[in-house]
Length: 460
Image (cartoon, rainbow, N blue to C red; front, side, top):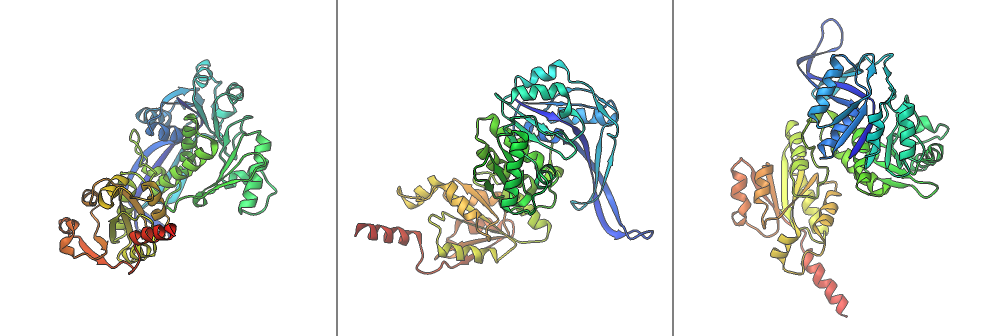
């Protein structure tokens, strides 16, 4: 069981379209408004963990007003069990006015002067049953409760605790397994260090490890990933996958909840931070907090599985912008210059390129028992690292017809000495008005030639 401790907010997104300016002032007029509400703060972190299939208990404080009752309902829909300490005062609300997915204005209301009642016995008993604890501190009083802090201090020696701090909140209790400030929060808690390069970030992290007596501090850096510092050893830099991001709201909650889930499963902090960076990057790429659907499993952050959700997200964005979707398929075993040139040419045909990659079993069927030389996850990782490749989807059939039927690209590019009539995919592509295009490989380059040459040289 994952226990989340912290302050909740009611987040509202009011979405519309802005196509003209007001005659009264040079401000946009936003029309066709639609409103969505969701839990914010610690509530979002808890909802994300519940959507991952975790048993989640949230220790928080809810107001006895309409916003508090709405929050309680949303958390129930999300599958989160709530231990309510009680909030004397109004529930804090964050309202974002958005046009076409971009925030135009933010309004904050409520929460002023609100006070959290003392922790109840059930809250401390629940903590004793946790496999991991996430403290999502938004500076509104829950994590400052003396009873909870004492319980967390005692628990830290046996249960992993992730503490996500806030400039207005309290500092972590001693011996937390991982603290996760962002760059601005780390600079606030460890002033006097200039710069934002790796050396400066690591120096702040070391100061915070000592200041908080934490096992480790992971400083999140947005699209630059995160830096993990543990003691005086070298920092671990975890780069973030390239992602098209329009709304980073909630990325910190996704990072912290993913890290806490990993630690609950027995992962090392380095493993937890690496997976949390991938999860947060995918979360942002999929639209951030605005894309959260309560009670439903979120889009998987991994590109190296058989699911098409990440590719479909990229396809949807491309088509929304009037772009052309290109797909190709193949084994791409021992990636070489011919592959790279082909992929660059394929990407130049449109605005995104999806690579449909044969899994290991289908490569063996097509190429023989000695292939592939490189396993599917490694082949996918190498392909995904190329600037010309936007997503990789692994499939287990001999041809990519089934996966293409789900993706429905505008163009299917194929390399080698084929005629369009010889490709089983060509007729399929026609069904939705797509086009099949042939592109040449770089002559004299092939995986088979590389294998033969390596065997010849080894035999000398």
